[in-house]
Image (tube, rainbow, N blue to C red; front, side):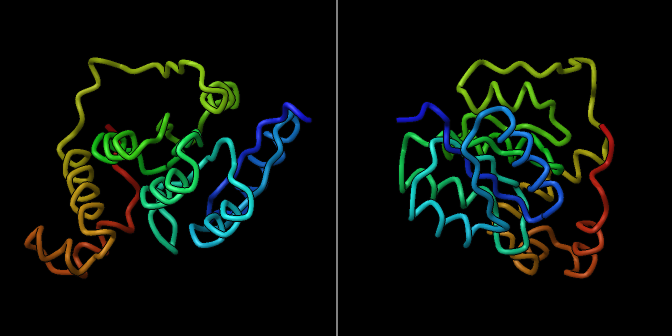
Length: 177
């Protein structure tokens, strides 16, 4: 029997997904990849992974919902959420759903490997880094969008803005802190 940890990498960005899978394979992991939640669920049903690296935002659905799916299949799966759209509300939601770590892209390979193995991970945080008003707005929009299961029309209604205005805000990159 092998001591290689099985990892499912789920990300809609093919280039990033394949590079991450290759890096993890070189480090001794048994890696399978999926381009979205539907493919990931099918692979997890075939053979439940010991760990999963899940992107937060994908066209097919939220990585947050995939956490629920993976843990329903096997509650011992260690899920690490890896995202380019990090915010405090989504980090809290991910941890409440059962993710063991929430890391923002780009992430150091050593930090990701430690997270996959269940080790304590410390990412340097600047305590004096007060978020800008634009960042606060972006994080609030992300929280409302998550609460609406990524339904833009419903989120726009709750925020009291036009749907197209919300879509324009979502197309922008996250503001700097």
